[in-house]
Amino acid sequence: MTHGAPTNIPTHGPDDLVVRGAHVLDPASGLDGVMDVRVSGGRVAEVGEGLRGTRSLDADGLHLFPGFTDVHAHWRTPGREDEETVETGSAAAAAGGFTGVVMMPNTDPVIDRPVVVSGLVRRVEGESRVRAYVSAALHEGLKGERLTEMRLMREAGAFCVSDDGLGTQSAGVLRNAMLYAKDAGMPVILHCEDHTLATGVVHEGVAAALAGLPGSPGSAEDVATATALVLAAETGARVHVTHVSTALSAALVGFFKGNVPGADVTADTTPHHLTLTDELVRTLEGMYRVNPPLRPEGDRLGVGGALRDGILDFVATDHAPHASEEKDLPLEEAAPGFLGHETAFSALYTELVLGGHLSLERLVGAMASAPGAWVGDGAGRIAEGAPADLALVDLSEEWTVRGEGLLSRSGNSPYIGRSLKGRIVGTMVGGELVQDRTGARFGSRA
Ligand code: DOR
Image (cartoon, rainbow, N blue to C red):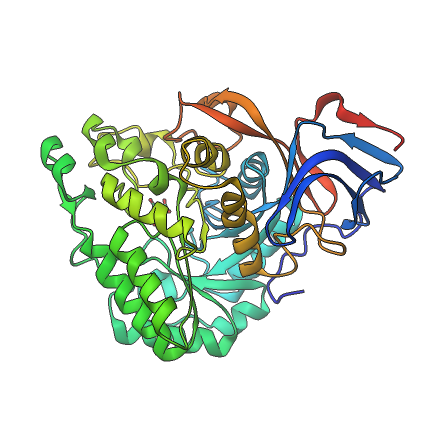
């Protein structure tokens, strides 16, 4: 088991279960066809045809994917349990087909000391429905000044380090942080933002000008991404660039991956940067404030192409619940960010796959295989001996996103009112259904 890997999930499922007749799609194992999957002792025991077990789940007409992994979520615990808790965040994740989630440390208190890490690990063990990984802070108080005790936090159960929510302003400080993280054996997740350039509340461009809103240029992200990539290549630290939102930042990632040996770099983009644009800020609604901001269509197409081509490795949601008193405000006053777990697959399936821009196989690779491989522990594949972490999906189901139907404690989804296609029917973690809309599909004998 990877250091910092969650220990909350039992290794023994209830008993033998055969998921029968689903279209199994797993790019990592090369599976693509109708077959059975037998689950036993919390793991995948067998994949094939005509399998037998003590119970069966009739998955005729459904798709079965490896469970999704979301390396970027804010569950607001500790400190803002009015917005999200480990229980509600993990319920929302499970509803979206996620079986593994990395929790960001911009909480209150910040996850920047071993005692805070172990406190959160205990809450995860008691409350989480999915595998939840703790990201500790890179710097004390996320201030980009003093490094945290990464090695001690790793021993307390942290999986990675990040100052997400803020960029590191000094390249010298960031370089030291990368070297220290490498020494502590932890990956670094970087929010790339130069705060001397990011002085607005939306993307600086035509939409901002028409709405009369202060903008931040794309360079606020690109300059910081370039710095991060140069330092990653030089230090050899394991660096993950999160929420890439501009075409240029995606191209920079591609350049380093292709041309700079020694760069151990991965990157993700979000469902909202893949499906929404800054046109929405013309509504002036606080809902559409997010950081990095929604970008123009050219950037949306640029990051989408980079995801399709594997330059951007995967999707992460940046699930960011906010209380209505902080979000239902004019755009300039609203807190940045919105919910992501429950709509991610459906939004991307509807817009990108059905829109003809991305294959279903690549979407599953970007939501399950690649982020699963990033966290390790056999996540993101359906193979004999791998954890039975699975997502059962009805691609034909159409649903309308409604605030009251979401399991998150907050209701700030930018997709509310939208009609989406494809819905999670069941999510299994360690062989147990943690999200269950399977209805009458169970049988006692197979
Ligand atoms: O929109 C955002 N919300 N971006 C971030 O980087 C942080 C997040 C939050 O914590 O709300």
